[in-house]
Image 1: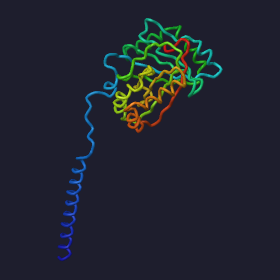
Image 2: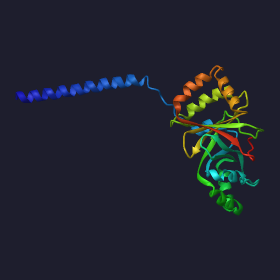
Image 3: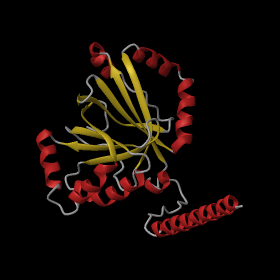
Image 4: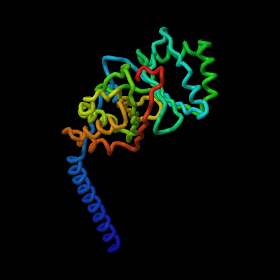
Length: 265
């Protein structure tokens, strides 16, 4: 009898302890929730929020690693272009500093994914292009490509006269940070446009994801250094760097020289 009472007493005490603990936990959880950052529900995809609404341009960037002994022959090949195709070469380069013996091509598809699909269908039926690909394949070690959209706050890349040295800066961001990157750069890009160095800004849609490409043009390496240093004298540039660096997992810089047929010289 005494043991039974003791058991009931312990059981009641245990329930009371659990109840108290739960109440305290709930209170702490409620209190903590006052300070937790709330993520707003988005009614649109980040790509739609960041890209240009007035155009439906889609871009493709290609990286071709060429056999060193074949680079000159590769550069002599004319990239396949046809007025009946809704696509155009924006620029073609050879990497000077960065990965060696590499060709980089940037294409624009006016009309987005339907334009890309139309091009692919036409190319598969084009004997001249199929022969071109067969010859080109003999010169290559590897290939990689990505489909890109352009940031709404950057210039659309247009043909320019040379001679220019181009820098492609590639940032691999932490997943979920693209919107913050775009918001920061939308305010900061004004600090990098005075010398007409901003060519284009893009973010990946297919291929490696959460990748940003910024394309810049400079008259020389000295001009590049002076232009980049001058940005630090402008109010707000340091703030942009401070807030965007933590968003980056890795970054890469390629210095590139345009090929003779590139619209961007």
